[in-house]
Amino acid sequence: MKENDQSRFIRWGIPGWMMFISFISFLLFDITLSPVSNNNSLVGFLARQAASLSLDSTASAAVVLLVAASGIPLGFLIYQVYFYIRWNSPFSRDGLFPPLIVGRWNDLERTISGIKENDIIGNDAWRKAWASNPLYKTDHSWKWRYIENLFIELAQELDSKFSGASINVRYRYLLDLMHTLGAGLFGIYLGYLAYLLVKVKTDSLSLTILTIISAACLFILVWLLEAEDKVRREENKHENISNNKYLALKPIKNIPAIQFSNPSAIYLIFLFAILYFGSPSPYVVTYTQNHLLFRLIVIALIAGAWVFSKRHYPKAIIWTELITLTALTTVAYLISQWLKSSVEFKLEWWNIGWSILLFLITNMIFVKNRQNTRDDLIAMQNYTIKRCLSIRNQPKPKGKPAKIK
Image (cartoon, rainbow, N blue to C red; front, side, top):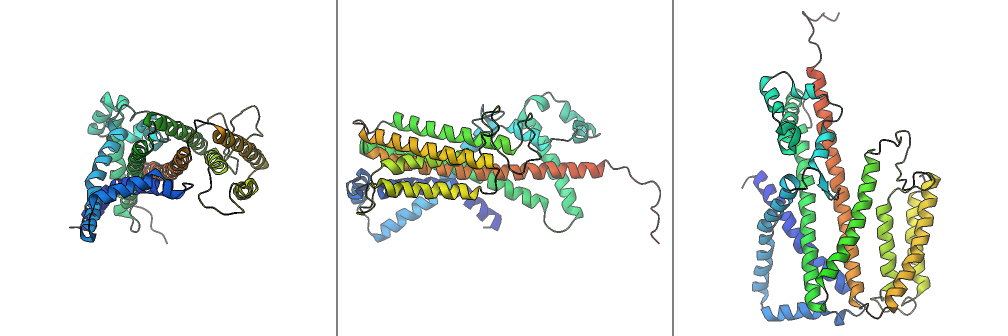
């Protein structure tokens, strides 16, 4: 098997393996943070499943290898779902809850930003025929095929003229990384869904309620990430942020003193505070068990580290986020006490809450990394096309060039 074939198989297997790893991680996270792990329903469920199999060491090793090998076809199936949503679904053109599902049309506009349509089409008859097709203006797939082929053509021209790092190799690397992150996130969703199904079976919980709570928390995170991405890409045209050293999100336009740099991270700190204040400690220590002062110190250290990391930011951002963290910490404590006093609130919900937080943190990491990779990819395409077209459009010198004496 060639090296390219091996890397392709590994890439196909990553989403499937991410599903297995995330499923196991959510289970272990639930058990580890349980107040009394021995009474956790998942422990009994897993013990019964292991006892029912009754496998020796050889059979257990064979099962592990079989599961690992099944990650490749499973990952390939996940890739097909990912590419359908990315390329051919009703959400492909304009996206759905970006940056979770980004519209291809937006990517197209950013790729050819600042480039004249006449320069893209050129004077060749076959290029004009391609662009004259009505689908060129209405179908994102039709137009993207031409733009991508144009970029590859121009990248090959540059690679043939200049030695060193290959633009095409760099492009393929970024493209594979972007799709691997996207498909890997789909695998995490499937692993989280499998975890929820197990919790429904072991704790007699409602799958509908668990799904609604998880989706609501995820929606808020995605909405905040999209707000950050709009500022970072300077899509808000009426705001002139080109002269600012730091990008800031201004939720209230009439009050410029209220500014945020990373509201998505503050949101996750808020959820962490609710769980940390309310959930019983899994580790019985005399001076820390249910000790409000100790937990306040931990939250204060997290908030202090956050504010310290922003010490070079404008004061408006520092004060806004410091006041917001203080207010949200108070609200988190009140919510946690209300949940603890609620008769209908079950102890198992705290474990699920921690798993939801892990799910959201994983989402933020993958989405942010995928955003950065996508931006690198689009910037490379835009830069390369502009560079090559500018070289092509330069007037050719007439006659022989003068000799340099």
